[in-house]
Image 1 (cartoon, rainbow, N blue to C red):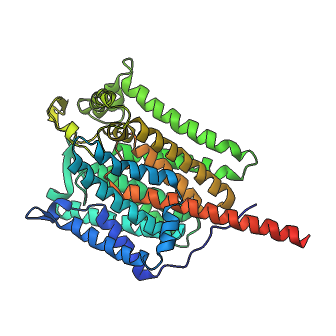
Image 2 (cartoon, rainbow, N blue to C red):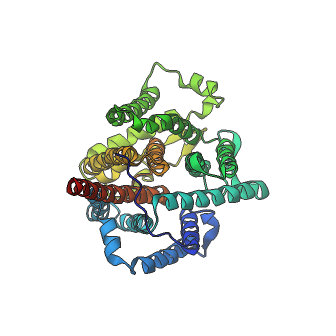
Image 3 (cartoon, rainbow, N blue to C red):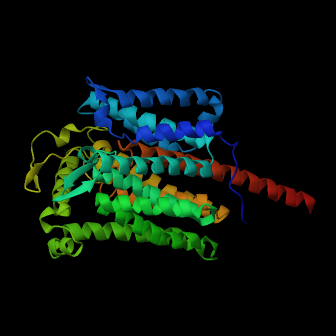
Length: 427
């Protein structure tokens, strides 16, 4: 039985504009230029905008609590993050980073409470579209700010402090534009935005972002086969495919028989700048550290472990000062131990299960967007920490989509039960 996505009361244009502005500032554009006399002005602006959301939330506090409590496992993960201050090796750092994560989580709950899935897609599209235009302007007009040197090449970073930051946001923008194009009357605008985003990824030379777009778009036709009678096999197909890709990457990096220099040359990359090998060395360090505190880790957001000076990694002929594990799962293992890692992995699998269920019930592009975003976030996480990470906007979108799925499935179940009762009464 096909059911419709449950509608919410439409959000007015001014509130959508507010959400776009808040999300744009949450991406931390040009944040280094916004530090005045040691004060992070941009952070204070975001906190002020959160207060506006708080005012809107207080109009219907019961609804906010109802939406926010739909996912108990998500609440457990947030509670674990806060609780990790108690055993953290650097409690002040853990507390500060926990507050940042709480802010992003709060805004995700606000989005799920106030906006329908379609409205969320529109807000995200406008946010990332503006970020793309600003990045083009900064990279062209102010190359000292909007470009950087990486691997012997001058690449674009736009309004962000690293090329991969620009690449990740443009990858999300490209996928979102592609899905919105399916039933839009303004296909030319979305085509332009899609090509623009791909162009910026190429200018940033963000290989991970480009690969994530290609893989996600390749999976979209599979996600659309929920109409098949045997679509119940789809969760297994998707999960096996993603796990196979993840295992393939790990094997590629760790195998002694594969010449990664030849692979880099084939991809048009300088083999002297073999980032996979240096990440492999970093991952070995992280695993050894995690073994020392396996169950609960060192505490959320503890960056001290990367700066204690016990290890040196050489990258591009220089010492690499790493500040994170460059793999989201290892980052969670290090910070929250096996307890946090198992909970997060289970939540990801639960998200795919809910997304596929929503897709089979509604057959809408909103459900397709949910599955696509869960996929691209999983791919990002293989080389960067995005789950429970300090890259706040991807986590905020994840929270809003997770709670929106819970809301939609709960309401659809209620509607389905009501229809069944009506049909039984009428007969």
